[in-house]
Image (cartoon, rainbow, N blue to C red; front, side):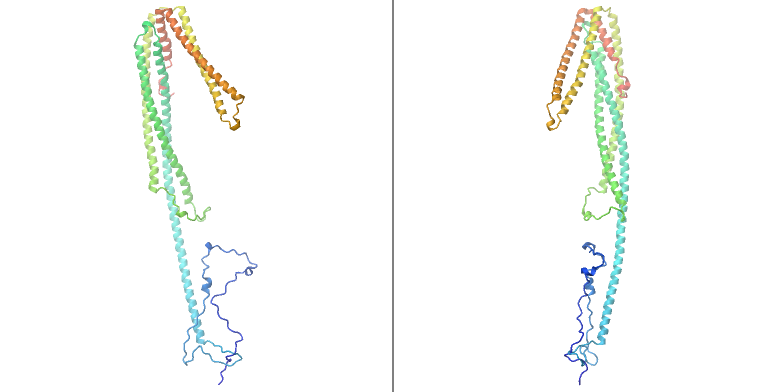
Length: 490
C-alpha cells in the first residue's frame, strides 16, 4: 500500500527557517537616522529607568513546545503520515494538540510576564512615592532646623549688639573720665612748679631774712600735698588705662563674635530660603564627607555667653574705677585749694611784717631792679629764640630724612642736599650760641643780684625779701588753677 505524501527524497519548495534565539537588533546604522533629528546618546550616568539594560534579552524568548506524549492509538506525535508528492524528503508535522499546547504555554508565560511587570510597576510607584515623601520630610526637617538656627543666631546677635552698645558707652565714659584725670594731673604741675619756685625764690633771701618762717613751712607742706595728689592720680590713671585696655579687649571679642554671627546669619538665612526651584543650586559631589565644623551647639553658645559675661564684668569694674576717679578728683582739688589758701594767708602776714620793717628804697636799687627785669625779659627772648630755632631745625632734618627715601639713582647729592646739610649745621651752631648766651644771661642775673646785695646790705635785704614774697611769689600764685580746672572739668 502506497502512502499518500511526498517521498523521502522530496525537498520542500519553501523550507522553514530555523527560529533565532534572540530578536533582531534594532538598526543603529547611520542610514536608519536619515532625515531625522541628530542623535545625541545619553551619558552613562543619565540612563533612564524606563529603558532596561536587558531589553533584548527579555524580548528574545524562544517559544517552547509541549512535551510529546503517545496518543491513544499508540502513534507518536513525532511521526507523521507520509504522503506521496513531488517532494523528495519526508517532512514531519505537529499535531493540533501540540499546537494548542504550545499556544497555551506561550499564553501562560505571557500572562506571568505581565503579572510580574505589573507587580514591578506597582512596587516602583510605591517606592517613588515613599522616596518622595522621605526626601520631602528630610528637606522639611532641614529647613526647620535652619530656621531654628537662624533664630538662635538672631537672638545672640541682639544680645551681642546690646552688650556692645553698653560697652561702647562705658568705654567712652571711662575715656572721658581718664581725660579729665589727665587734665587734672597736668594742672597740678603749675601749682607744684609755683610752690617750688616760691621756695627757690625765698632761698634768695639774704642775711637775717633767711628765716624758716611759717610761709616756708606751708610751702613745703603744699609741695608734699601736691606730690601726694599726683601719685594718687597717677595710680588711678594707670588703673584707668589698664581698664580701658580690658574694655577694648572685651569690645574686640564682642565685635569679632558679632561679625562672625552676621556672616553666619546671612549664610544660614540664604540656606533657609533655598528651594528646589531656586537659582544657584548645583551638585557638589562629596561635600557631605567634608566636616569642617569645630564646635557643637553647647560650646558655640557658651563661647558667646562667656564673651558677654566678660564684657559685663569689665563694665562693672570700669564703672567702679570711674566712681573712684570722680571721688579722687573732688578730694584732691579740695586738699590743694585749701592748702593754697593757707599759704596765701601766711604770705600776706609775712609781707605785712616785712613792709613794716622796710624804710625806703634808693634810686640805684630801683635801677638795679629794672635791669634785673630787663635781663629776665632778655632770657625769655633767648629761650623763645631757641624754641623758634628748634622748629626750623625740625624742618631741615625732616627734609633730609624724607630725601633719604628717594629710590635708586635718585639719591643724588645735589645742591638742595648740600644746602640742607649746611642749614642743619648752621642751626645747630646758632642753637649752641643761644644756649651759651642764655647761660651768660642767667649768670649775669645772679651777678646783678649779688651786686644789689653788696650796695645796701640791710636795706636791700628787706627790699629783696619784700620783692620775693610780694612780687614774685604772690605774683606767680595768682595763676593758681580754680577748682573746676583741678577736677579736669575745664
